Image 1 (tube, helix red, strand yellow):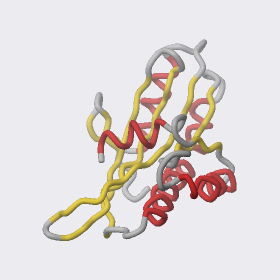
Image 2 (image 1 turned 135 degrees about the vertical axis):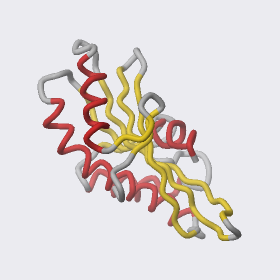
Image 3 (image 1 turned 90 degrees about the vertical axis):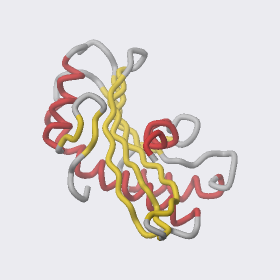
Image 4 (image 1 turned 30 degrees about the vertical axis):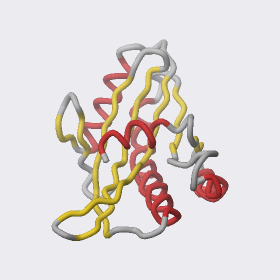
Length: 165
């Protein structure tokens, strides 16, 4: 993660340490619940000062199954990527980078608090132009040791992160 700063609807801008404390606090409120920890990214091409850029949002979601959740997001801008394949690869790589930095610290912080699954959500699905990429990007995620979810189960990317692109 480039700067380690995320946004939170409840707390404004938070650094990685504060993000972890917020997740631990949320999980501590109901230790009997089951949680999903989700990382997903989405992007949108935009014009900024006359230049084409790709606005990419990575979301970190802690979902108390059946009982709501909290999420954090960060935004970066990159030079416009011209193909959908490169766009999806970029989103997936950014989600993996966020998970690789966040997960080891969260595993320590959440030990013994409550059961949870970790998932990387990817903005690809069986319908539309990304259907041919599913095996590739799911392979990227599973090859890095994470569970991958695609549409419609990959809400961290196409719903949460998309909300801020």
